[in-house]
Amino acid sequence: MIPKIAAPTRYVAILCLMLILGLSACQDSSAPLSARDGGTAVDAMAEKEAIRGVLMRQQEAWNAGDIETFMADYVRSDTLRFTSGGDVRYGWDSAMERYLATYPDRGAMGVLRFSDLAIDVLSQEWALVFGSWDLERGGDYEDIGGKYTLLMHRGSEGWKVVYDHTSQAGQ
Image (tube, rainbow, N blue to C red; front, side, top):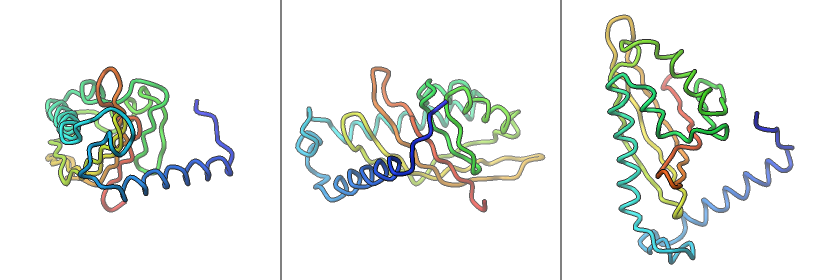
């Protein structure tokens, strides 16, 4: 269980995050990341392609009916934060349970397509992803879709989703 953060501390943390994101948006995005973050040079285009590869791997796993492989690109930790349908879940196991309950069979899973990808490499270790998702389903299930925002971290196992905020259109 993640401890609750006192309101003043939470506001300071939010303000700091907004400041960091605001400053990164103002910087020259054509400059190598090393020039912007003081670290080792990172090829932002290569990192964007690596992240795009993660998302395409997830899409393929989903379309093969393999939720376990789809979830392999989420950090397998209690620190994972997954928000969808107005609910916040913490931890990989909780997110997995939600997927299995919401998509109990291949008909419910449908065919997943990610689109409108915007990938911002913030540093050597952090990236922000925004995109659209659509599930084309048949039979007893209607087609659905929406938007998502992912905060991704690059560690020893590559890029992993640490925060996922997914919304469904019309909700």
